[in-house]
Length: 323
Image (cartoon, rainbow, N blue to C red):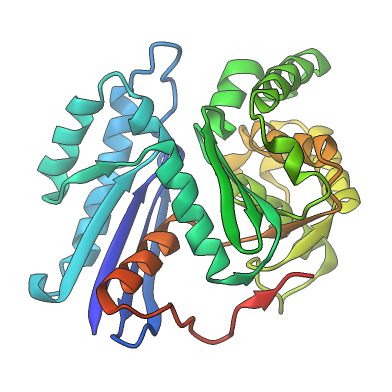
C-alpha cells in the first residue's frame, strides 16, 4: 500500500487529495481539502502575483502541511503542482521559492497541455465516455480535450478563466449587456483559433471546474435531488441555459444567496460559466455532463499505472455510464 497526496495549486482555489493505492490498482480516497484563495486576483496585464493573494495562498497551504504531518514521512509521497496563475506569473520564481520555504516539497509548474492531459486521464477512468469534448474552466485558464473512442485526439489550454474574464470584462455587481457582449466576442475569437474545435460539434460536453459544477449544484437544489452525486450528473442545454439566465438576472447580493452557488463565487460565476455556455451554442451541444474527477485524479491514476503496472480499479460505486 502506498499513500499519495496531490496538491493542486489553482488560480482560484487550492486543493489537496490524499489517497492510498495497492499493487493491484485499487485505490481509496482518504481525505480531500479545498480552500478558495483567488491566487490570480489582480494579476492584470503584467501578470504579477499580488502580495495579498500570495499570503492567502501560503496560509491555506500551511493548513495542508499540518494535515499531512499526521502521516509518517516514510509512508507518504507528495506531489504538488501549479496551473495557470503560477504558469503565467512574471514573478513565478519568487513564488516557487516562497512555496518551497513554506511546504518543504518543490512545486511543479504544469504546462497547459499537461493540465489538459491529466483532466482527460481523471475523467476517462471514472466516467464511461467514448466521444466527448472536455472543458475544465479554472480561474485563469480553460482546458479543452477532444475525446474519440476514449482516446484524446486534441488537447489545448486557453488563457481565459473565471477570474480573468470577470476582472477583464465584467462588473462585479450587475453585469451590463455591453460588457457581457465584449467578453463573448473575445471568447469567440479565442475559440475560433482552435482549428479542431468544430470536430466536437454535437458531442456531449463534459464539464469540470468549480464554476461549471455550480450549474449541477443549483439544478440539484432546484429539483430537490439528494441521492445523485455531481459526478456523472447531466443537464440538457435548455436547462443549463435557463439556470445561466437566472444567474444573469440577479445582482451580486442575490447571487450570493442562491442555493447551490457558493457565495465566494458570486462575483465570478457569470464569467466562469461563459465558456461553457458559448461552447454549447457554438457546437450545438445537447447535454452537459459534470465531473468531479480531473487533474488530481489524473495524476493519481497515472502514478498507479506507472508504479504498479496495473490499470486503475475505481472504488465503489463503479464508474457511471454516459449515454
